[in-house]
Structures are given as C-alpha cells and as structure tokens.
Length: 200
Image 1: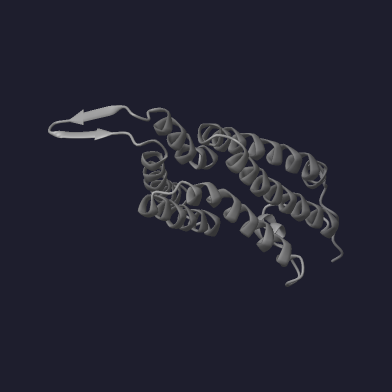
Image 2: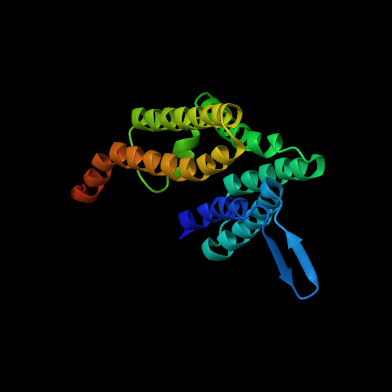
C-alpha cells in the first residue's frame, strides 16, 4: 500500500500534463489546464496528501518522504512563481543526488551505514552485505539523477514527463529486485536457523 501511494503523485503529474489545453467548467468556475505548470501544482498537492495518508496508514513519519515533500514544494513553487519548468525538472536530480550523498557519507560516520540503520531492525546481515547494499543504492541515486538531467536537456518536455513516470516505476522495481536477490540467502538462513541449546 505504501509503495502504491508513492507513485500516485507522479502518475497524477503525468495524467494532468496530458490534458494540456483542456478546459474544465465547474459551476461558474472555468479553468484551462496549463501544461507542466498545472501538472506541477497537482504534484505539489498530491505529494502533501501522500505524506499525510502515509502517516495515517503507517502511524510513522518517514524522513525521506518529508524531504521529498519539501523538495517538491520548493522546486515546484519556484517553477510556478517564475514560470520556468527547469526548476521542477531539476528536482529529481537534486533529490536523488542528495540521497546519494547522505548514503555515501553514512559509510564513514558511526558504526552503521544508512542502509543498515533503515533496515537493520528487520533483517540481520553481515557488515560486508550492508556495505554492498549501501553502495548499490548510492549508485542507483547517482545514475537516476544523472539520467534525469540527460533526458531533461536532451529531449522534449513531453518526453521528460513520460520518462519521469516510467523511470520512477522501472528503477524502483529494478532496485527492489536486486536488493531482494542480495539479501534473500540471509533471510532463508535466518528462517531455517534452529535454536542452539544453552548451557545452564
């Protein structure tokens, strides 16, 4: 459920963008969809609602979602205020590179890296595997951020909007699968482990 909620704002951004030029009339109020600017406004509202719904469902407040919301509001607000789509196009890169930096720095601060701090209470892994997982996620965030700029500057706005949706789904699924493959042997070991006799 939580993973589904995370894709809703991006999906709404994509859908609203496709309605560019359409006019909607409600009672005496008339509004014409203004391409990426209307889509950005919808993304901002949907992201705030996503954070609220996640909090109500999970009873926990995730820092990552908070930072995501702040980034969307900041870059989205700049896009609307200055009528410049580059701000919202830069948001995925800044956010992902920020995460890459945070995960990278965590390798050298404290006894646990950020990946182990996030998942360490749910699964026990050797230190080497935690390091590999952390490196995997750093690589993912770095590549995703770079590809976002490549598409934003190398292709049309419409192509970037479609890429934003499909890459978010694709990279998330790929990262989840690779992570699952890396930790699955240790999950089986934990489940199949028999309790050892204790000395009185």
